[in-house]
Amino acid sequence: WDKGRRKQAELPSRGFGTTWATSYLTSTVNVLRAKAEIQALACRYRNQLFTFPLFGEWCVMAASREHVKDHYNAQEEVLSMEAAAEELLQLHHTVGSLFCSETYHIPAIRVSLNLNLAAKLPDLLDEMALAYDEELPVAETWTPLCPSKVYAGIIARASNRIFVGPKLCRNRQYRKLVDGFSNIVITGGAVIRMAVPGFLRPVVGWLFRSVFGHHRRMVQLVAAEIAERQHNRAIGKLHLNPNDMLDWLMDQPWEGRTEHSPESLAMRILNVNFVALHTTTKAGAFTHALYHLASKPEYIPILRSEVESFLDPLNPQSWSKESIARCAKLDSFLKESLRLNGLGAIWMPRLTLSAFEFSDGTVIPPGNFVGTAVTAIHEDEANYARAKEFDGLRFYKLGSSAGAVHDQQDDLKADPDSDLQWQHRLTGTSPSYLTFGGGKHICPGRFFASLELKGLFALLLLRYDVRMADGVRPADKWFGPVSNPDPNAQVLFRRRSEIP
Ligand code: HEM
Image (tube, rainbow, N blue to C red; front, side, top):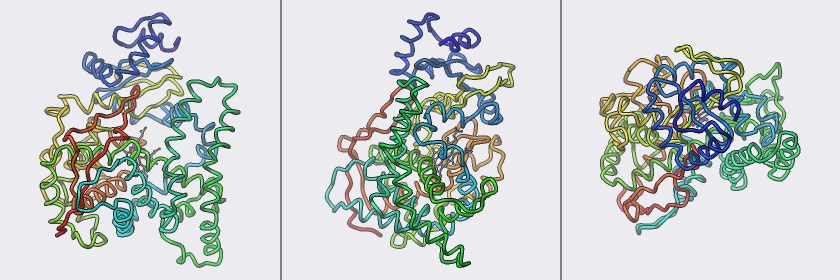
């Protein structure tokens, strides 16, 4: 609180008391009204940094274009993502030091996964089609289903076809483990951070890890697969190993080491699933978009006809990156859903490890959280016309001519601050579109996420009709600055009788 009071004195905030009691009272109100309060502050202190009080903590908020660019281009040693994640999720306690100390999954995603996207797309689509058949068994009558639960299984299965191959991705025990992992870590981290004093955390963390045993269970599940692949490598028969994430991880050198232990590889697989599944499934990129589609039936014929004209409905494995990229309206629909419904109101948290100076001269002392006011930015009229309204074709109209092919290499080369057409595509980012972050830590998995979301949506449009029973989109569930799609809402599904 002391730290917070200091920052409050230097940066604007709104109506918050300077005594212990009023500060905590305000923090309580903020748990209930975080999005609205942050938006009001961003509106009032336009082009200025401001502070936002949370329980026992103040966060310095960047909302203007310049401040956001300063934030995402800052050096990790000064404005640290890792330190913020450690503090917020208590990772050393919840998952152990191995989870945080080895980071060779990042080059495996940034380089190997992205280079192999075209080659792995048929497998991804094949698994999605199988998963739809097996996990979404609905007939030609309307059937209510809870999408967060159904799609958690489908997305874990499809993603893991590319991470560990068909055998493990279809193993229900394995899927249950990777699917539940992020929720348990996030909840456990928050409880340890808020309720457990520092000196007890190592013991509580050890108990937490022993009870949930994620790493132990993962080692048991993948050990045989790893042993077989390492044997193939040792006898020079590398070609026998599947081309997938586990193999790309095995290829990554780490601190002079060229062969990784099963324990190390199992932890990287958990880490890859943590970053990939939480955003797509739990925090609901897919579910959010599905709720939009089911409550706005006017988009179904528009998107379906686009998908039918570029993708062969009877042969998903024939879809290519290029043909999927031609579905510019679908791309726009998903981007718009992510603009309005993301993971919460404070995005890209950082912790200052040493004093950080913004370009306007504001200095943030060490030990403070700094974040971006993402919902305020995404719903600012200065950035988007009718910013609070959902317009599924917004980005299609803004930038892309129908049929324009989106080339991933363009994304990799483009200047993130220029207004090129690619910015209006799903994987494009800018200081006013932060779903995938920006700058130094920009999401390296966004090309994979984009293909996965579009593949799932295209198959859905081709094979099923969907609608909400009452026609209304379920409201997001907010807790403090964090938001999720309603986990219990049901969508009506019906298998289409005629698939062209
Ligand atoms: C819709 C889905 C996704 C969303 C919205 C999303 C969003 C983000 C954001 C905002 C960041 C930057 C965080 C920050 O700056 O604090 C990030 C980082 C990251 N994402 Fe994603 N992501 C998604 C899917 C994925 C997938 C599928 C993967 C892996 C296959 C992935 C891997 C990563 C990794 C490894 C980082 C850390 C990069 C670094 O430390 O430099 N993400 N993601």
